[in-house]
Image 1 (tube, helix red, strand yellow):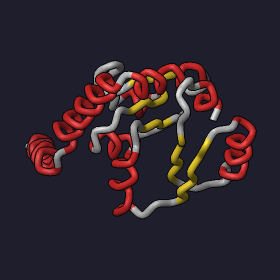
Image 2 (tube, helix red, strand yellow):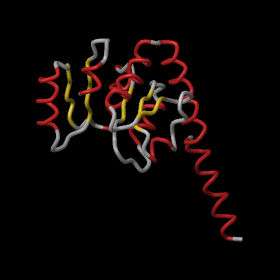
Image 3 (cartoon, helix red, strand yellow):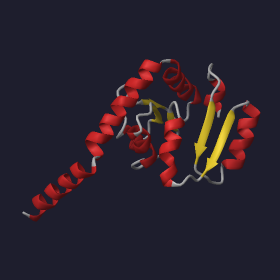
Image 4 (cartoon, helix red, strand yellow):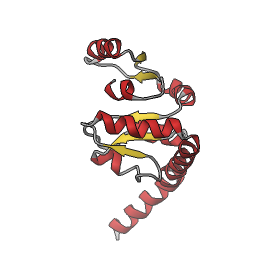
Length: 156
């Protein structure tokens, strides 16, 4: 909310998911004058449509293991802006497949998101590279082939 309030561009946030922070986030959005669409938990099959509606994807978490939502957004070809925690850094190459920021610095998030929203060519380039990365690394046939190779090596 802090980052969205700092943007020069007027934005509408769409938050997917649910949890105990929703009441606090709604109040924070009202106080900051930020328009937010709280979608709650969205069925997995409906997520592609949510990604298609978006201009960018933000994952502002303090910790991540292997962030499935980030992979989904990348596979949708969205420009992704994510906190620089371990799991996100394993997927995003700064300036190539997305932009990273310090999760404790809303000004950094605002700056990165402002760039993506204000520079359509950058957003397209990041989104295309992100999608290519996911297709390269997470294609099911390629992943199964790598796993089979690993099992054969271990079995030897």
